[in-house]
Amino acid sequence: MRFCFKFRLRPSIIEGMRNQAEKTHEEPRGWAGLFSGPTRAVAVIIAVGIALHSANIYVASAVMPSVAGEVGGLSLYAWATTLFVFAAVLGSTATATLLGRAGTRTAYRSAILTVGAGTVVCALAPTMPVLLVGRALQGFGGGLLFALAYSLVRLVLEQRLWPYAMGLISAMWGVGTFSGPALGGTFAEIGQWRLAFWIIVPVTLFFAVWGGSHLPREAGRQAERPRVPFVSVGLLGGTVLVLSAVSVSSQVAVNAAGIGVALALLAAWVNHERRTRLRLLPAVTFGPDRRLRLLYGALALLMIAATPEIFISYFAQHLQGIGPLAAGYLATAIAAGWTTASLVLSGVERRRSLIVQVAPLVSALGLAVLVVVGPLHDASVIVIAGIAFGFVLLGWGIGMAWPHLSTAVLTAVPAEDQELAGASVTTVQLTAAAAGAAIGGAIANVAGFTDPGGVAGAGAAARWLYIAMLVAPLAAFVIVRAYARPRPLRAPAQVDAAAARS
Image 1 (cartoon, rainbow, N blue to C red):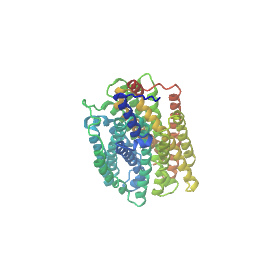
Image 2 (cartoon, rainbow, N blue to C red; image 1 turned 30 degrees about the vertical axis):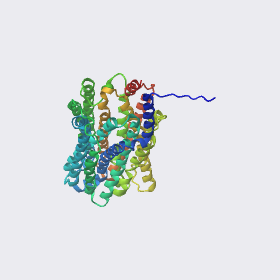
Image 3 (cartoon, helix red, strand yellow; image 1 turned 45 degrees about the vertical axis):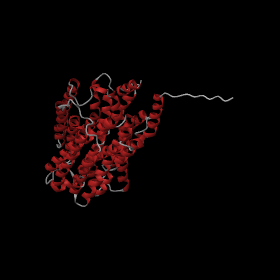
Image 4 (cartoon, rainbow, N blue to C red; image 1 turned 60 degrees about the vertical axis):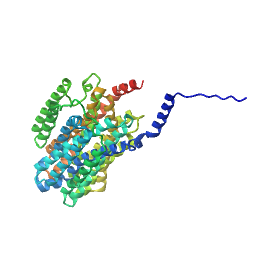
């Protein structure tokens, strides 16, 4: 006897099964998910924007010895980086306003064309002050691009792709750190440092056309247009400018006074952020839960730890006696470590806490190596290899931690402050980079970078710079340990998502 059972599934069940099958088929995971389908163009735009911004920082570090030799202004050496990064902070803080008023397409095109305009000014600069104007324009546009990259992650990509997008951002920062010194060093080697700037201009024009056309026009636009937090920007910017201004002095008393004024401005900024509704950091930063403060502190300290790379080209040329091109490639060692670690470890979730805690110690080990070999007036292969190894370790530690820390910031911010989440990471990173450049310039000048200068001044400046920067990763280690010590609570964004699924 044969039994035949017939049954009919409800249409809603069939549709649900079909949707699930299509979702499983259409949503590749990991890096494949980021670089497939409609997200591919967005990933390329993010990658190029970050690489362009970071390359512009380090092109200058490679050509500055040649620039100073041609147009003068050695005492303003660190300002080419400091002013650039300070302007980038201003650009990053203006991103939310520009995005809310113009949408992603117009905001992106405005940013990258500003970078192009500043690059043209740098290429034509007859004097150091004119070059600094161009660097400021480059930095402002780059800050816009940088913050827009984090905003695109939040606005366009699904949350499952965020760790990989953050890994991409961190890796491309390393790629820019690699390509900038190599590009600048190549043209400085043949006595054509201006071409290092000119070659960037076509890239900005191409991506203004192609990149803008692949971004949604209205995404990010708000009915109620956001305002710029001028008071917060002024206080934070003033902090960096004071540090930058006193960094050109070789007098310890002047630098000490400048640091005191900068700390007072920083305290005023924190107090203002606590009370105002128009702020640079999410409101939860100053609440009873200290986790977000710890995350920002760790990010800032890791960025400051990278400060010596600004001077590596100068030190290598004057202490190890190598040419601009070789010095430029030596400067890419930190990028090699940073990029590789970001790509390899950004998607690792099970050991994330251990990775983040070990990372600052790796960077500290790299700086310890540099303390030993960096100041040596020696062109031997062992010394140069030791310097490269130290910078690889320094970059590796930063690349290990950066994707995980920045992703943690995005997921720890409640829904009402999501607009500030991406921009806040950029603001902290760029402010720390500007402050690090100013502090590094002050240490170098006090140690003898400009007086007595030459080999003796470069050696003393290198020694004290590497020793001083060791404090940053060690302090970052203490902070990430404090962050990891309590059992992490579920982030507000994750709680909202869980509630929505239920």
